[in-house]
Length: 58
Image (cartoon, rainbow, N blue to C red; front, side, top):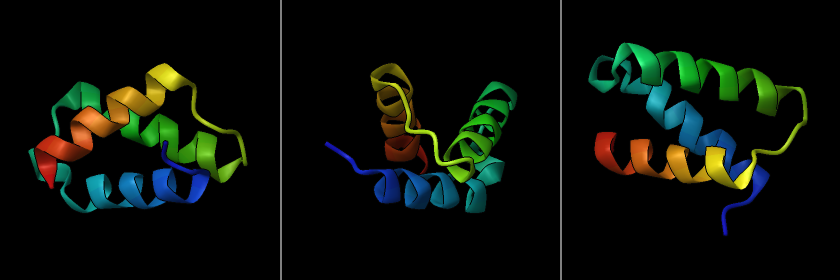
C-alpha cells in the first residue's frame, strides 16, 4: 500500500513525463496534486488509477 508521500512522488513523476499523458490523465494528475498538497489522502480508486498511470509512463 502506498503512503501519502509515495503518492506525492508518483504524481511528481507523472508531471515530469506530462508528454506521455492523455488530456484526461493530465487533468486527473493535476487534481491529485492539489488534493495531496491540501493534505487530503487519495481514495483507493484514485490510488489504483494513479498506480496504473505511473506504471505506464515511468
